[in-house]
Image (cartoon, rainbow, N blue to C red):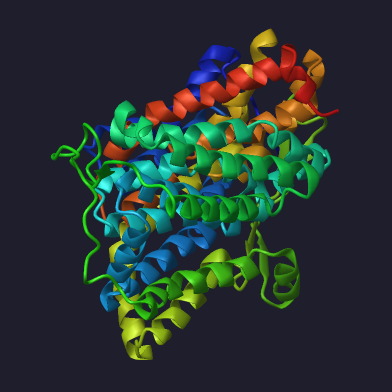
Length: 554
């Protein structure tokens, strides 16, 4: 057995700096735009191993085994999802269905700001609720790039939009993970998150359009933005507090899409924003002109449904794949569990991170049939056959997709290897403990701890599992509500989703903008910090100030 060490240098600030080196190395190299993302990830992985072995005293064989385990987990399930989303996207492009989809969406509105609301926010929230794990960014990024948005706009705006729904992603998986490590009721945790995130479900649509079109461009369509936000935020609160935390995103996104489309049937902006150029970031300025006459080449109803058919199939398949009953049905005969020898249950998480020495599991669970990526592959094959592809052409197209995604898959695997290694070595717990000493300001910094967890691991679920128990222990020591701070870990974490390296690589892959991950990171970084700080302020108010404190569940 090896016990994790959280202050290996016998000096908390120095130990924290050492723990931060891997993620700082990764972010600096990516942001520099001088090092390709997969090379940056591999360098940061080497740094993480050196820190784990020589500073945090992790046995070298354990460090290397944790690295391999993380790399495999990076491909299954994360890389598996990305690969098959891009496969479906390339099939629709090759058959012309994507071009028809562009015209179909243009039939709802030609205004680029409204397209963003519909696709990046509402439609993306549906995919977040159905599958999560990078799917919404991959799908909406691909759709936006197909509609003519620049790679930076398609990537960055998809990342910003995919925040408010994340805590309930993949049918409430982050809430389930949080409940599993804290021992708190998932319904109460989900309800508490539902008393935090609806504020940001109102803010994020305005923020999204402001980033794209500026203040004037945002205010010109404020009624549509308000409809989008309100029609998502209210169902998000009601479903999470009075039904369950598993179907929050599905219900809220469908209501939001229906309300926005219905509203656009009776209202359109006086001046259409027709340029997909990102304000101040692209080489062409946004142009505005009066509404154009409807094109005589608009798709027929049959063509419209044919273009939507692949995405309808995806939604139907992923809804089935995300349910507990489906997983319970297929996993018993489609699962291979591999406890990693000389690693599984041989590392102890110790106080103050755990109440008592607790073995860390290290099992690769290959649930190949219930993976979201497998559902996406099946949906892509069904869609491809329905679009007229022969089996041979599908195989050839899949081979081309693998070649296109190869470097991205390497990057994602390296990112997850870093996350797994830092978790098992205690490096990330050292960073978490640095936040836990902030005393009366802990509600603010504890929220940022959730943000840090997602930025490190790429997953709100992983952040909740990583820091959820620490939030509970620290809040009880400080006389704060453990329900409030556990929920704050998840709510703050969603704002870290836009800067985690895994999501950035997914975005660059979906938009075919390889090698520009640094540009995407620089674009979204300050938005991520600003929104996370706003969540922290809300949690501070809920902790100490009436009437916000009355929102805290007991």
